[in-house]
Length: 222
Ligand SMILES: Cc1cc2nc3c(=O)[nH]c(=O)nc-3n(C[C@H](O)[C@H](O)[C@H](O)COP(=O)(O)OP(=O)(O)OC[C@H]3O[C@@H](n4cnc5c(N)ncnc54)[C@H](O)[C@@H]3O)c2cc1C
Image (tube, rainbow, N blue to C red; front, side, top):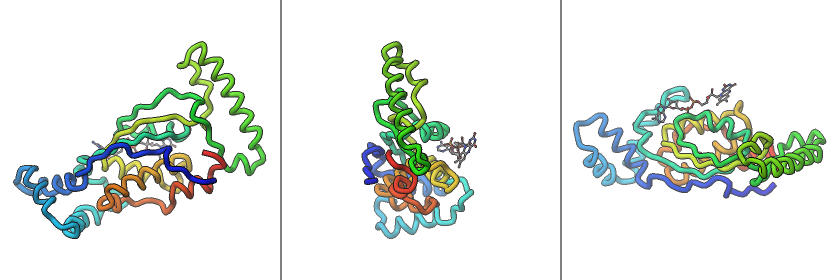
């Protein structure tokens, strides 16, 4: 299966997020206005900012609470994930989440195990039957029609959260005992955050896996 990345997009983030977090950490232990702390952080060389980041986050253990100053940088994602993953995603209370109505319009995932067990065609027939029933119910009432949609169908969600929540979410939901469907989401979010904010994201302690690896090893179709 060839992985595509357009199902999970980082559509907005604080361009100065890392600098704001480091400035807030300085602010906490000094007696200066925030604007001065930020000016100072901006004046530092990249290497000096990296040393400061080390001082602030290097000793953070797996079970330590990430410091509150990580809350000063925000990220917005537009994501398509299956309803099974969404059932877990929505438990994360420190995010602002805006799900669209659950439909059959974004297709469904096929877990590899279903195919390997020889139930691929039966699974697909059941999903196609659900699509037909969904359309009938939709004509009656789109809200009611959601109840017939199985967990393998995809839905679209807008989510905004800060870097402290990103640490909590990505570390918990990439763990080996987390469901593969949410591991894929958490790994992709981590990858996108690490691309724009590598200085601080590198302190997240993630299970050694990639979202492409999850797709390869656990799905026939996403
Ligand atoms: C592997 C795994 C298995 C699970 N199994 C079960 C199960 O069997 N049954 C079940 O019912 N549930 C299960 N859960 C779900 C779990 O109980 C939680 O519902 C889920 O992890 C979300 O809650 P949370 O507190 O972890 O995260 P969130 O609600 O996202 O909160 C995250 C963090 O918020 C921090 N915080 C406080 N203020 C802020 C702020 N302003 N900004 C950012 N962060 C802040 C807190 O310190 C916390 O660490 C499981 C979860 C995982 C990861």
